[in-house]
Length: 315
Image (cartoon, rainbow, N blue to C red; front, side, top):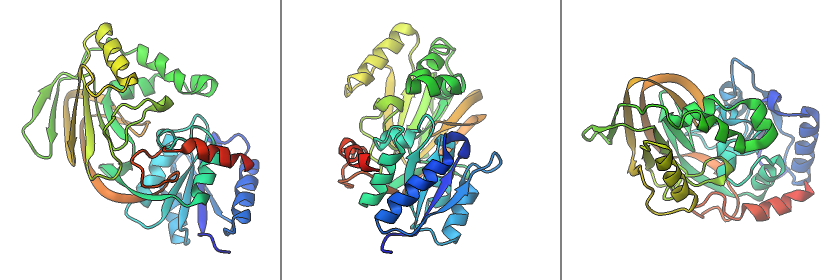
């Protein structure tokens, strides 16, 4: 056996046929000369962090995270700061990190990415004792996630978020103060504040066009549309990938503090966390070793993911 020792942290609720997945992953790794992986199932009490830590203790050099956003975020938190690599096997309706890797909901492509050996050290954002790799947010984006049903996501995928978003387009804005790298507070009345490390939302929409995953900085977007016309102008500019997006301020910082006058919904990488008045976030530069499509040095983590998907058809 020449490949790395691996483990799979899987959310069994997100996998339609776990036995089939076990067989397919085991067969693909065996053909590549990898040892058989160890499997660890998540629980409602532990969505993956403890299982990933146990996998590292058991000698795993690479951990596959198989599940939704919560599973991936939990595994990222366990692996950050180690030399154990993370590979994503998207399950269910997929997740934000899978979208930024160009994997969609295809577990076979995620497996092929790991087998081809593209590796990249990327930054992670930290809030309290949890890590994220895509983006954290307070306000509108978290409300959208809160009001998007799991049934709709299973039926129509990322388009289900449109319904969740529509319910909150005219909500009153936050009253917030935002501090970047310890600077003076910036008073704002935003609908959402998003802090990102990479830039894609579900469906491949690139919100933070200048975000780079390993520059030691987080990108901050302050969204302040006041009516439906403002939302339409903002969305159109994002979809067209314009350099300047109306009603959206952007900054970079290594430390971000957001203070709201009232508790707001909050999210990490598409996974809801408890509402709160405060989000304090800092970056850990190049803390995570991530399996990415080749060429692994391209600024876009999803570069040439389509070619990987074609090669993954044999799996």
